[in-house]
Image (cartoon, rainbow, N blue to C red):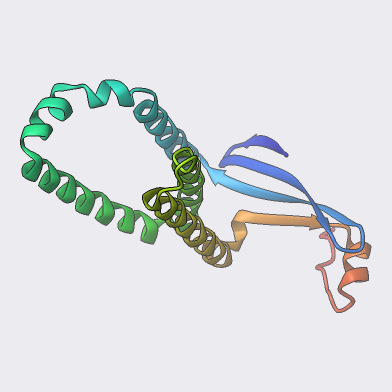
Length: 177
């Protein structure tokens, strides 16, 4: 796997192995705005994970939220509703990037939830892992839908003769002169 910087974005290039020893390359183009958003989300996520102890002992969490649990739950519920609406808008606007982030978040969450599974194997941890599997499944489904809708993002270069060996009815455009 390699990456290539292009004028309109970052191309991620992977070697593809198909049946009948057919080899090719698959290229996925991420536009620069998408790369910036992915990097920003990674930085925010890393900051929250890295500084979670400091966040938990801050005045807002350790004192106010502890003594005002109903207000804190309401604030978290309202924030959840707002973020959920923003995520729905993002999903409708750019399904491809949303699905990639959904899969990455699901894998990260699966790892974090799995850390609490053993040795107790309590029900809350099992439900948390199952929920993350749902997130990953949803992300994969959205990714397939996005690729079907935006097939120009993914290009596949295959040796013409080899492709016709595994798919005899395949017709490839003749190279432009």
